[in-house]
Length: 213
Ligand SMILES: [Fe+2]
Image (cartoon, rainbow, N blue to C red; front, top):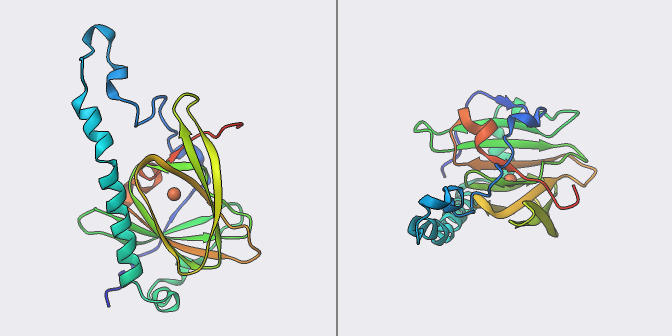
């Protein structure tokens, strides 16, 4: 059974949220022609329509990655035994992210996230696809819907993600969420992202503002 091959641990600090670029003024889903000067506007924007139409393909691709996690990763104890002990270290002030695998062709990175009780991620969409599995404990996932008019995300529902469950998140703003550990125990999760290790700090989370914030 293929197992993620560990590399040396790399701690990705999330202390400085300024390193995670906030969403630009215009949504990535906003048709590009809106940024074109009026006198240069075209009567149609076929590439804008194409980009919207292939969103389903992006989502399908992320789900396929999640299905591979579900099908090919061993149980948590077996997986964690292959990782350096540092991959399980938490932090007192924020959830910890530890790089545990890099793709030699720079196509993806895998990280173990350590969530101490009460720690949470920012509300964010994704600049790249993501798939994750809860390795230990239970995470709470809040889902949001993007409102292009106000340029803010509105909370829609909250679900519990229990040990062993696997999920996917496509790039873009059609899936905005935040994860947190609302339990009294440490939680661990494994996240795969479609970026090279050098771009994890800026190329994954698309931080957005929420309604009422
Ligand atoms: Fe995420």
